[in-house]
Length: 329
Image (cartoon, rainbow, N blue to C red; front, side):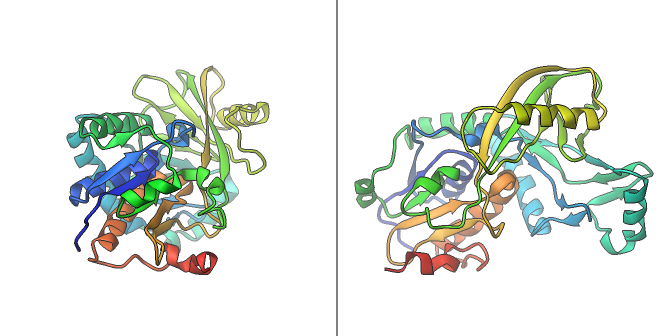
């Protein structure tokens, strides 16, 4: 496929950054603009990747494909950027109580899979870990700046004429974009707290109605909250109390609270991302990854790149074409 003009990626959060690296690998010319008037929720992300979901310990959607892809992707990207931000780490899910333990053990034969290791106290999840999203974004921004393809600039409609295609990676800000505000987003505000303590384990991510994540600097993060009623950047007292309650429930009583992080997850009503170019014009979207941006975006950046190059079509359940009726004239 011949590309006569560069593409424009709008937004340098997790989605835009990961897509940009795939464009570089595929030799697709592009620029990436990040609006200085939008706050970037990706900097507040916990960054955890976990192939297991729900109380039934089921494999998350497309777990095998996603996790086979994300490990080599991030490991290679660390080398490219000469930075450390990818931290594979086991995740431990303790049994909530004796009844839940028995309920799961009774169903072990039907729910067991390769990501799980069972113990008397709970279940260990393999191929889990976390990405230091803030570090990934900062090092990527510097990398893009050195190549002359990054700008702190807000997209205007007239700019589209200069590009082969404009791909919007705006996170929840897309709900205010007239082009995309008809899409069934379901944004969720979340808060995390960084804290200091000697009590939690530094060897794993603890996952029990929340998570405790050990950080390289010796501190921890506890998260996360979910709110659907307001989307400000301001931390709330109720979320702070909820996070303190999570610490207590996970056995941490001696701690010092350090920082609070606030972000808005760009989740969707059908829990599937929005990926692809609109028919009939040069606008596209790479968005809707919710709380799983670090695990979903690499694989779908790869498939989106293949689609743009005409090598392979996007799968129907993520393609923006499933909402083509919203964009018909």
